[in-house]
Image 1: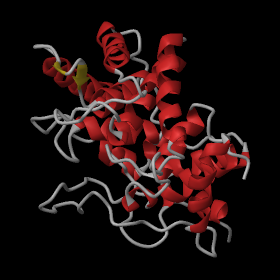
Image 2: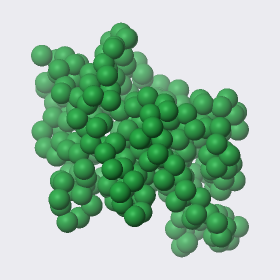
Image 3: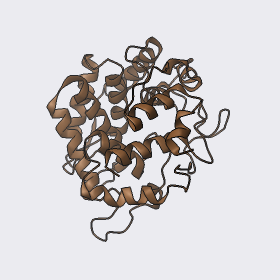
Image 4: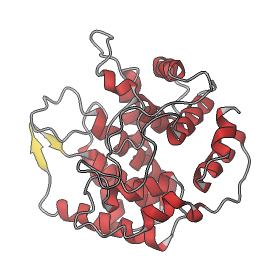
Length: 301
Protein backbone atom coordinates (compact mmCIF):
# COMPACT_ATOMS: atom_id res chain seq x y z
CA UNK A 1 0.00 0.00 0.00
CA UNK A 2 1.31 3.49 -0.82
CA UNK A 3 1.28 6.34 1.69
CA UNK A 4 -1.90 7.88 0.32
CA UNK A 5 -3.69 4.55 0.52
CA UNK A 6 -2.49 4.22 4.11
CA UNK A 7 -3.95 7.63 4.97
CA UNK A 8 -7.25 6.70 3.32
CA UNK A 9 -7.53 3.82 5.79
CA UNK A 10 -7.00 6.04 8.85
CA UNK A 11 -9.30 5.59 11.82
CA UNK A 12 -9.86 9.38 11.82
CA UNK A 13 -12.44 10.66 9.29
CA UNK A 14 -10.66 14.04 9.05
CA UNK A 15 -7.42 12.40 7.91
CA UNK A 16 -9.28 10.36 5.31
CA UNK A 17 -11.13 13.45 4.06
CA UNK A 18 -8.03 15.63 3.82
CA UNK A 19 -6.02 12.91 2.07
CA UNK A 20 -8.76 12.29 -0.49
CA UNK A 21 -9.32 15.98 -1.18
CA UNK A 22 -5.77 17.33 -1.09
CA UNK A 23 -3.84 14.37 -2.50
CA UNK A 24 -6.34 12.87 -4.95
CA UNK A 25 -8.44 15.94 -5.75
CA UNK A 26 -11.65 14.13 -4.86
CA UNK A 27 -14.52 15.26 -2.66
CA UNK A 28 -15.34 13.28 0.44
CA UNK A 29 -18.47 12.99 2.54
CA UNK A 30 -16.59 12.04 5.70
CA UNK A 31 -18.10 13.32 8.96
CA UNK A 32 -15.15 15.03 10.62
CA UNK A 33 -17.09 15.48 13.86
CA UNK A 34 -17.48 11.71 14.23
CA UNK A 35 -13.74 11.20 14.66
CA UNK A 36 -12.40 10.07 18.01
CA UNK A 37 -9.66 12.69 18.04
CA UNK A 38 -12.02 15.50 17.11
CA UNK A 39 -14.53 14.40 19.73
CA UNK A 40 -11.81 14.31 22.38
CA UNK A 41 -10.50 17.76 21.43
CA UNK A 42 -14.02 19.19 21.66
CA UNK A 43 -14.76 17.63 25.05
CA UNK A 44 -14.42 20.05 27.99
CA UNK A 45 -12.28 22.34 25.84
CA UNK A 46 -12.70 25.24 28.27
CA UNK A 47 -12.00 23.20 31.41
CA UNK A 48 -8.49 24.54 32.01
CA UNK A 49 -8.29 27.80 33.91
CA UNK A 50 -5.90 29.15 31.29
CA UNK A 51 -6.66 28.82 27.60
CA UNK A 52 -2.91 28.76 26.93
CA UNK A 53 -2.14 25.83 29.27
CA UNK A 54 0.25 23.49 27.45
CA UNK A 55 -1.08 21.48 25.67
CA UNK A 56 -4.59 20.85 26.93
CA UNK A 57 -5.86 24.44 26.94
CA UNK A 58 -8.42 25.83 24.51
CA UNK A 59 -5.74 27.74 22.58
CA UNK A 60 -4.00 24.56 21.43
CA UNK A 61 -7.21 22.61 20.94
CA UNK A 62 -8.73 25.07 18.49
CA UNK A 63 -5.58 25.01 16.36
CA UNK A 64 -5.75 21.21 16.21
CA UNK A 65 -9.47 21.32 15.48
CA UNK A 66 -9.19 23.69 12.53
CA UNK A 67 -6.24 21.72 11.15
CA UNK A 68 -8.60 18.72 11.20
CA UNK A 69 -11.13 21.02 9.49
CA UNK A 70 -13.93 21.12 12.01
CA UNK A 71 -16.77 22.99 10.26
CA UNK A 72 -17.04 26.77 10.76
CA UNK A 73 -19.59 27.64 13.41
CA UNK A 74 -19.31 24.32 15.26
CA UNK A 75 -20.66 25.44 18.68
CA UNK A 76 -18.12 23.70 20.92
CA UNK A 77 -15.20 24.85 18.81
CA UNK A 78 -16.52 28.41 18.74
CA UNK A 79 -16.96 28.34 22.51
CA UNK A 80 -13.33 27.28 22.90
CA UNK A 81 -12.22 29.98 20.47
CA UNK A 82 -14.19 32.59 22.45
CA UNK A 83 -12.47 31.40 25.63
CA UNK A 84 -9.05 31.72 24.02
CA UNK A 85 -9.86 35.04 22.37
CA UNK A 86 -10.92 36.54 25.69
CA UNK A 87 -7.62 35.51 27.28
CA UNK A 88 -5.57 36.98 24.44
CA UNK A 89 -7.49 40.25 24.63
CA UNK A 90 -6.92 40.45 28.40
CA UNK A 91 -3.19 40.13 27.80
CA UNK A 92 -3.36 43.20 25.54
CA UNK A 93 -5.32 45.31 27.99
CA UNK A 94 -2.28 47.17 29.26
CA UNK A 95 -0.52 47.62 25.95
CA UNK A 96 2.56 46.00 24.44
CA UNK A 97 6.23 46.18 25.37
CA UNK A 98 8.45 48.27 23.09
CA UNK A 99 12.26 48.01 23.27
CA UNK A 100 14.51 50.04 20.96
CA UNK A 101 11.50 50.99 18.86
CA UNK A 102 10.41 47.37 18.22
CA UNK A 103 7.36 45.71 19.75
CA UNK A 104 8.26 42.61 21.72
CA UNK A 105 5.27 40.34 21.22
CA UNK A 106 4.93 36.57 20.80
CA UNK A 107 3.25 36.60 17.41
CA UNK A 108 2.56 32.88 17.66
CA UNK A 109 -0.09 33.50 20.33
CA UNK A 110 -2.09 36.03 18.36
CA UNK A 111 -1.34 34.24 15.10
CA UNK A 112 -2.75 30.89 16.21
CA UNK A 113 -5.82 32.56 17.68
CA UNK A 114 -6.35 34.67 14.59
CA UNK A 115 -6.06 31.66 12.27
CA UNK A 116 -8.42 29.49 14.29
CA UNK A 117 -11.04 32.22 14.74
CA UNK A 118 -10.89 33.06 11.03
CA UNK A 119 -11.37 29.41 10.09
CA UNK A 120 -14.28 29.03 12.52
CA UNK A 121 -16.28 31.89 10.98
CA UNK A 122 -15.42 34.56 13.55
CA UNK A 123 -13.42 36.95 11.34
CA UNK A 124 -16.08 39.68 11.56
CA UNK A 125 -15.67 39.92 15.34
CA UNK A 126 -14.03 43.31 16.17
CA UNK A 127 -11.63 41.53 18.54
CA UNK A 128 -10.40 39.29 15.74
CA UNK A 129 -9.88 42.29 13.51
CA UNK A 130 -7.88 43.96 16.27
CA UNK A 131 -5.59 40.92 16.44
CA UNK A 132 -4.91 41.18 12.71
CA UNK A 133 -4.26 44.91 12.98
CA UNK A 134 -2.00 44.34 15.97
CA UNK A 135 0.11 41.75 14.20
CA UNK A 136 0.60 44.11 11.26
CA UNK A 137 1.54 46.93 13.60
CA UNK A 138 4.02 44.77 15.54
CA UNK A 139 5.72 43.21 12.50
CA UNK A 140 9.48 43.79 12.49
CA UNK A 141 11.35 45.26 9.51
CA UNK A 142 12.54 41.81 8.41
CA UNK A 143 8.95 40.54 8.21
CA UNK A 144 8.74 38.58 11.45
CA UNK A 145 7.82 38.94 15.11
CA UNK A 146 9.73 38.51 18.38
CA UNK A 147 8.97 38.66 22.10
CA UNK A 148 12.58 38.43 23.30
CA UNK A 149 13.45 41.62 25.19
CA UNK A 150 17.14 40.98 24.54
CA UNK A 151 16.88 40.52 20.78
CA UNK A 152 19.00 43.00 18.85
CA UNK A 153 16.37 43.71 16.22
CA UNK A 154 18.47 42.35 13.36
CA UNK A 155 16.41 39.17 13.12
CA UNK A 156 13.00 38.20 14.44
CA UNK A 157 12.05 34.78 15.76
CA UNK A 158 11.11 32.06 13.29
CA UNK A 159 9.21 30.35 16.14
CA UNK A 160 7.01 33.41 16.64
CA UNK A 161 6.61 34.12 12.93
CA UNK A 162 5.18 31.00 11.27
CA UNK A 163 1.88 31.07 13.20
CA UNK A 164 1.55 34.83 12.77
CA UNK A 165 1.94 34.45 9.00
CA UNK A 166 -0.65 31.68 8.99
CA UNK A 167 -3.05 33.79 11.04
CA UNK A 168 -2.81 36.77 8.72
CA UNK A 169 -3.29 34.50 5.72
CA UNK A 170 -6.44 32.94 7.16
CA UNK A 171 -7.78 36.37 8.05
CA UNK A 172 -7.16 37.49 4.48
CA UNK A 173 -8.97 34.43 3.14
CA UNK A 174 -11.95 35.14 5.39
CA UNK A 175 -12.16 38.90 4.82
CA UNK A 176 -10.25 39.79 1.65
CA UNK A 177 -8.14 42.24 3.67
CA UNK A 178 -5.12 42.80 1.43
CA UNK A 179 -2.98 44.32 4.17
CA UNK A 180 -3.15 40.99 6.00
CA UNK A 181 -2.14 39.19 2.84
CA UNK A 182 0.83 41.52 2.38
CA UNK A 183 1.92 40.97 5.98
CA UNK A 184 1.79 37.21 5.57
CA UNK A 185 3.80 37.36 2.34
CA UNK A 186 6.46 39.51 4.02
CA UNK A 187 6.85 36.80 6.65
CA UNK A 188 7.07 34.16 3.94
CA UNK A 189 9.86 36.15 2.33
CA UNK A 190 11.81 36.03 5.61
CA UNK A 191 11.74 32.22 5.54
CA UNK A 192 12.64 32.07 1.86
CA UNK A 193 15.50 34.50 2.31
CA UNK A 194 17.03 31.93 4.68
CA UNK A 195 16.08 28.99 2.46
CA UNK A 196 13.98 28.10 5.50
CA UNK A 197 16.85 26.93 7.70
CA UNK A 198 20.16 28.46 6.63
CA UNK A 199 22.26 31.27 8.06
CA UNK A 200 22.56 34.26 5.75
CA UNK A 201 26.20 34.76 6.64
CA UNK A 202 27.49 31.17 6.47
CA UNK A 203 24.82 29.12 4.73
CA UNK A 204 25.01 26.59 7.56
CA UNK A 205 22.00 25.04 9.30
CA UNK A 206 20.75 27.49 11.93
CA UNK A 207 19.31 24.80 14.21
CA UNK A 208 19.37 21.04 13.47
CA UNK A 209 16.03 20.63 15.28
CA UNK A 210 14.39 22.66 12.53
CA UNK A 211 15.07 19.81 10.09
CA UNK A 212 12.97 17.32 12.08
CA UNK A 213 9.21 17.42 11.39
CA UNK A 214 6.97 17.32 14.45
CA UNK A 215 3.23 17.17 14.96
CA UNK A 216 1.69 19.15 16.44
CA UNK A 217 4.33 21.88 16.14
CA UNK A 218 2.44 24.16 18.58
CA UNK A 219 4.64 27.29 18.50
CA UNK A 220 7.83 25.52 17.42
CA UNK A 221 9.37 26.11 13.99
CA UNK A 222 10.49 23.30 11.70
CA UNK A 223 10.83 22.96 7.94
CA UNK A 224 7.61 21.01 7.46
CA UNK A 225 5.53 23.60 9.28
CA UNK A 226 7.28 26.38 7.36
CA UNK A 227 6.64 24.61 4.06
CA UNK A 228 2.99 24.09 5.01
CA UNK A 229 2.57 27.80 5.70
CA UNK A 230 4.41 28.70 2.48
CA UNK A 231 2.19 26.34 0.51
CA UNK A 232 -0.88 28.10 1.88
CA UNK A 233 0.66 31.41 0.83
CA UNK A 234 1.30 30.09 -2.68
CA UNK A 235 5.08 30.19 -2.17
CA UNK A 236 6.06 26.52 -1.83
CA UNK A 237 7.19 26.41 -5.45
CA UNK A 238 9.72 29.20 -4.92
CA UNK A 239 13.23 28.07 -5.87
CA UNK A 240 14.50 29.08 -2.43
CA UNK A 241 12.30 26.43 -0.79
CA UNK A 242 14.22 23.77 -2.70
CA UNK A 243 16.72 22.91 0.03
CA UNK A 244 13.94 22.29 2.56
CA UNK A 245 11.93 20.23 0.07
CA UNK A 246 15.03 18.15 -0.69
CA UNK A 247 15.55 17.54 3.02
CA UNK A 248 11.90 16.58 3.48
CA UNK A 249 12.14 14.08 0.62
CA UNK A 250 15.38 12.68 2.06
CA UNK A 251 13.56 11.80 5.28
CA UNK A 252 10.84 9.86 3.47
CA UNK A 253 10.92 6.13 4.26
CA UNK A 254 11.04 3.52 1.50
CA UNK A 255 7.34 2.87 2.14
CA UNK A 256 6.57 6.52 1.30
CA UNK A 257 5.76 7.62 4.84
CA UNK A 258 7.42 9.85 7.42
CA UNK A 259 8.08 8.92 11.03
CA UNK A 260 7.36 10.95 14.17
CA UNK A 261 10.35 12.65 15.69
CA UNK A 262 10.71 13.32 19.42
CA UNK A 263 7.42 15.12 20.13
CA UNK A 264 6.86 18.30 22.08
CA UNK A 265 4.06 16.60 24.03
CA UNK A 266 3.69 13.91 26.67
CA UNK A 267 0.99 11.23 26.59
CA UNK A 268 -2.30 11.69 28.42
CA UNK A 269 -1.58 11.83 32.13
CA UNK A 270 2.06 12.77 31.63
CA UNK A 271 3.76 15.18 34.01
CA UNK A 272 5.32 17.44 31.36
CA UNK A 273 2.99 19.18 28.89
CA UNK A 274 0.53 16.31 28.36
CA UNK A 275 -1.78 16.09 25.37
CA UNK A 276 -5.38 14.90 25.40
CA UNK A 277 -5.08 12.89 22.18
CA UNK A 278 -2.38 10.57 20.85
CA UNK A 279 -0.88 12.04 17.68
CA UNK A 280 1.61 9.18 17.40
CA UNK A 281 4.96 9.28 19.15
CA UNK A 282 6.81 6.59 17.19
CA UNK A 283 6.69 4.98 13.79
CA UNK A 284 4.91 6.30 10.69
CA UNK A 285 2.90 9.40 11.56
CA UNK A 286 -0.36 10.23 9.82
CA UNK A 287 -0.35 14.02 10.18
CA UNK A 288 3.33 14.41 9.32
CA UNK A 289 2.89 12.16 6.29
CA UNK A 290 -0.29 13.97 5.22
CA UNK A 291 1.31 17.41 5.50
CA UNK A 292 4.53 16.30 3.79
CA UNK A 293 2.60 14.88 0.83
CA UNK A 294 0.44 18.01 0.63
CA UNK A 295 3.51 20.23 0.56
CA UNK A 296 5.32 18.16 -2.04
CA UNK A 297 2.26 18.10 -4.29
CA UNK A 298 1.77 21.85 -4.00
CA UNK A 299 5.46 22.39 -4.83
CA UNK A 300 5.12 20.21 -7.93
CA UNK A 301 7.24 17.31 -6.67
